[in-house]
Image (cartoon, rainbow, N blue to C red; front, top):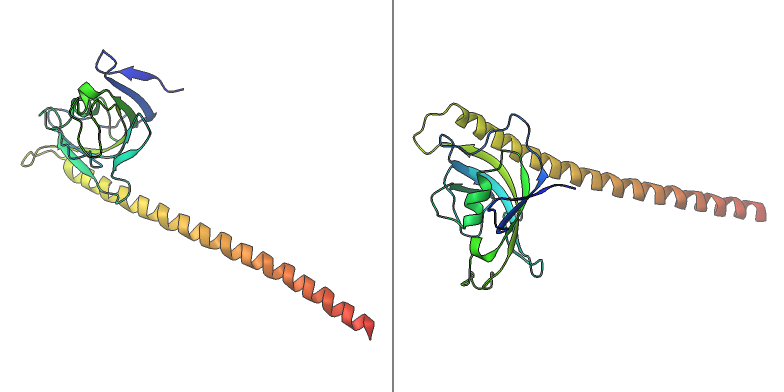
Length: 200
């Protein structure tokens, strides 16, 4: 079972790695502060990261926000206090390609006020986040930017291909099922035909 890490030191932000990143994967840094991912309930970070996510209420498992439905991507810069504390703390510890489950206590999320109507006061939130890319601030000259853009494009193509393959497999299964039914029917018809011949 994956280890749960207490990122805040007081149990306020817990992280469990769902899928590890590759050993040579990059992580948010001062030169790559912008993270891209899937939209995080109207929040933004500061070292530019791109990521996908789904947020649920710990109390009842209800999904209050997700980027998976429209396959959108969320970007923010880490360290600017523009998002909930839990995101600012957790994204610093992730690498591109990593998927993690984050459990965020109210004091590291939306606190006593909540974020009506989706998030009630004093709500503990659970996010599953995939860090898709890290990039420099606009105007920064970092060679890996074009590589990351290419990687994002490739990731998009892979997802589209996977969806198309899944649809094709479903179609083949349906065709095979129909063909098997037709063969059974043909055998039944053949038996009926032989029975009629014997009767004459």
